Image 1 (tube, helix red, strand yellow):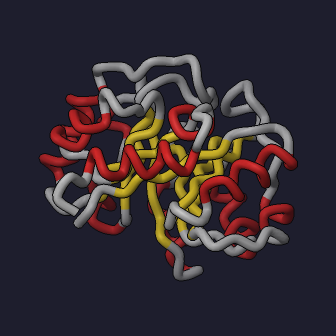
Image 2 (cartoon, helix red, strand yellow):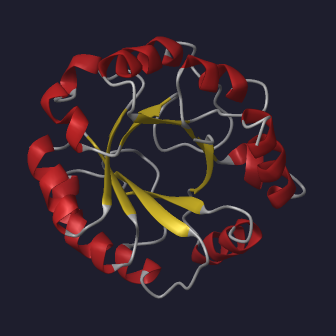
Length: 217
């Protein structure tokens, strides 16, 4: 299976959100919405579920819930029409309940964790019940300006050893220099923000990165 490049949008401005989405949706099959509530992380993003519901896009959407108690957000985001919901375990009371709630809506489900969260905090019993795990590679809730933490490579190996078929998504500081190494370590999905959207040609940056990690495609 080819490695997926998933552009990520984190902004407090709805017009900017729409603008970035339009720049990339014609080339990217998936786009990630970073939803931050201002409590889980200091940033606040613009677009609540009822706003996303009104957006018409060619891309499939996943939402990364950087919020306190992501279980409470599942129904609203399912109704918004997203295709996959990813919740951070740090403020999640019950990982099994979160996975069940998302699955009840027929959506893809993932669990996410910060770079400094103990790997033991994820419930290994449900690894085979989720579609993917998202590993932050730097501090959560910030797009641009932070470099990827090299500790991410051992964290990828940990989950690859748990399940050789698990989709592993890396988010934070991904660029053309480190993307091949992340894939070599076992990552199958790369969430990319500033490398794409800070480029003069976001669609071109996406295409370049996709070709780099899928050289034989």
